Every structure is written in C-alpha cells, then in structure tokens.
Image 1: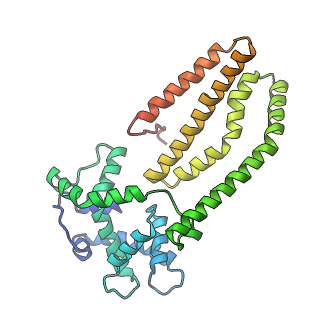
Image 2 (image 1 turned 120 degrees about the horizontal axis):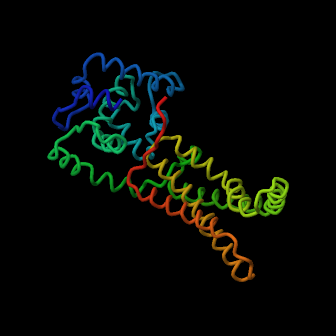
Image 3 (image 1 turned 90 degrees about the vertical axis):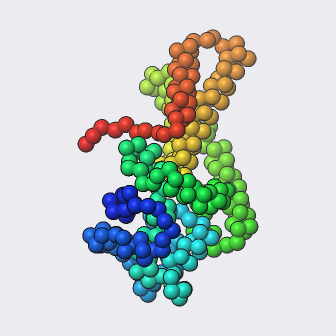
Length: 302
C-alpha cells in the first residue's frame, strides 16, 4: 500500500496538510481500484456482525492484522479521524479514505524503515519538507516511545490501565512459578538423560554440556523469538533478537564462568583451551553483529 500510494503515484509531490478526500483524489483510478480491493478484504473480514460498518474494536483488530499494533487511545484517535460524519461507525468509504490518509501522514516514518532495508529506495521529501514533518511528529513520537511497552493480551485490553498492570504482574508471577516448578521436577532427570546420550554416542561431555544442553534448555526462547519475529515489525523483531542475545550471553558467559570456577576451586585438569577459545570467539562475533545499526540477512536467490 505504501508503494502504491506514496511512491508510484505521489512521488515528488510537495507535502502539505491535506484531508483524506484530497489525497484520495490525487490517486489514479487503477491505484484506487487496487487499494480499494485490498482494504475491502480487511473490511469484510473484520465486520463480524455484518452491519456494513466498523466499531472501535473491529478497527483495532484490522490494524493488528496489518502489523500496526496500536493502543486503545491511539485507536480512539484514529477512529475519530476516520469517522468523518461523526455517526459513531465507519463505513467502507470512510475506512478506505482514512487508511490512505493514515499512510500519507506516516509516509516519512515508513520511508525511513524501507531505506534501512534498501538504501536505494527513492526519497519522498526534500530536507526542508522533512524538517516540517519532524516538527509535526516530534511530540507524538516521544509519547509513543514512552508508551511502547509491548502488546496487551486481548482479554485485558478493555480494563483500566492500573488493572491491566496488576493483572499482568500476577500473570507473570504465576507463569514464573509454574516454570520454576517444572525446572525443579525435570532438570535432574534431563541431566541424566543427556549424560547417558553422551556416553552411548561417544560424544565428549563438554559438547553435551555446552552445545546439546543449551539447545534443549533454550528451545522456549527460540520459539518465542520466532513468534515475535514472524510479526515482521521493527519492535517485535528487536525483542526477538534481544531474547536470543540474552540466552546466548547467559549460556556462554554465565555457564562458562561456572565451569571455570569448578576447575579453579576443585583443582581439575585444564584440557579445554580450544573449546573455550571457540566460545569466546563466538561471543565476540555475536557482539560485533549486534552492534550494527542495520541487520542484513543473506539468502540465496531462488
């Protein structure tokens, strides 16, 4: 949608504060048809009561589907902009025009994200126009950064903010308690099983302890990071990457420190120079990768 509206049709146009109808009128008919078909699909899918109109809850679900995770206050504000006739509901036409206006208003932010992926992406605004947009959006971005604390579970969205925080805290403690109980129950049998696997396969206990065991114990972090990254938003991918980095630091740094302590205090023979160097080298490689502002994925062309 961004490419169709902002690049293909409006490239080079001067930025100005316009309403949704004017932006919509500036689109060519083929683009209007394509954008309408896409947005009507979302409209029909989330018009659950088949009233041919959208309420605030349905509008919020549409933005979630499009990876635009908005808080309730933001949805209320967007709903007020979309509902031009102020009848408390959004018609098909209001929805289409409102989404076009929303994309236009957030064009600079989207352009920056696309340029991080592809530096050759065409620039939409001159430096003077970008300064105007920065002045208009600066205050709103500060508030969004302060409020950006992750997604809220669907069953808690309708509760007051204080109640949401209390419920989330209780749910977190409950989940951690259950997880701790499961670790206490299964950690010792799991250690015996991994040790037996190493003995029967002839694999060194070092590799079982520092390769196989971390993979098994961190499977949950891997799945959680995958689920976050599959949402394909900047915030969710950052959370997924940070979770994997935290797990790597925990296993490579903390567990290696414990191993070194056992060797020192128990007077064990030192025979793990190569393995230790490889672990530390891996940590430096991950650190250098993490310090890069833009993360690039290399894949073979199909």
